Image (cartoon, rainbow, N blue to C red; front, side, top):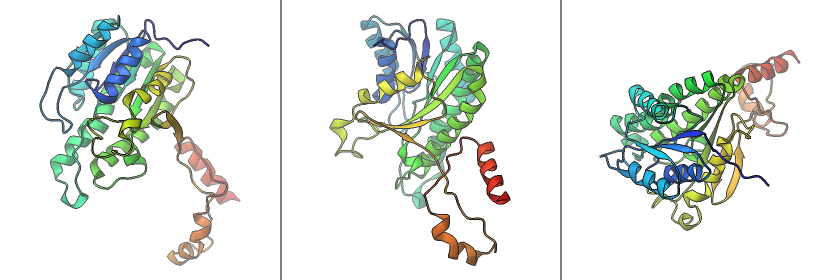
Length: 297
């Protein structure tokens, strides 16, 4: 069985100074990729700065790989542009983007302050947008690229105390679907992972699983999605501890109400929610086609 290699490929990994990002960067570097290791070096709450990115670069060099450090913030358009420009300046090309940077500002929604909302949305959702846009442009022009985003079960299924984080991660899932559609004809494929891993962000949250879900159990999935042989596009995978599962959005067959009223919704709710024979549209166009066929029947 041939090994998936990334010789001559160039990757950006954001938030790569520790945890999942570090693991992703090391995995890609071991397989031959040249890596731009991006990390501002702040705390889990996004405060402060440090040299974590340089430490990962040194680890990659010790493995015989090639990497450069970058300390720009993903949370602004200029920062995103600078990250992509740094990769192009260092290596002359860009093939892979792993959007991993993140912070936490957890609190019950009724107590959550505006700056907690802004900070998390800025780093997670806007950060993914701000780095992806210039990267997507480079990849689109080159006719090739792989983008791997980081969503979360908190956004896809919900989690108490994480309204800001969940909203951002749900937005990233939507962005993944759109970029997959827009990039497909130009050789750019976009997918996402919803990982659970033992990192400083999850310490105290997943104590029962902490010893079983190392970042190294997630990174091989990222490597697969980043490879040129991967034909997957627009998908989201739950990844933790060696378990990999596809997450998908579906809709029931539904009911066309003859009497369009609140009462008819109440009376038909069981049929509306019946999950037998569900549909899985892969775009807005597919969803509207399903609607049109239902209304015409």
